[in-house]
Image 1 (cartoon, helix red, strand yellow):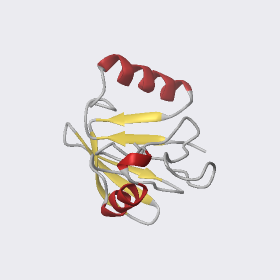
Image 2 (cartoon, rainbow, N blue to C red):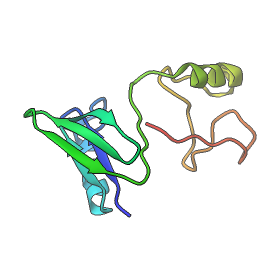
Image 3 (cartoon, rainbow, N blue to C red):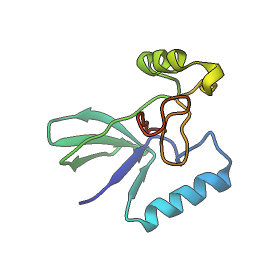
Length: 118
């Protein structure tokens, strides 16, 4: 299988220090992840996605599974989950759910609730 990460900006994780973002880019590349930077998803079809590159060219990628994630704020569902868990239980981040190193959601019964995202 092949994994391609598409990012409209010139690099990933722009909200972090450049060193961190570069480290993650290098790690992903070393794991075989193709990074398509300066490219925006313009359209998704059942088996292909169309990208518009910064230079205006359009590129089409075939896929078997598409996972499309966008935005830098909590979705309403995620916000309700965080509010339900509560700040006193450890959910204090305004951007998303806080997890531990095993992706277990803080403030929930150990090993019962997991979250993955950026």
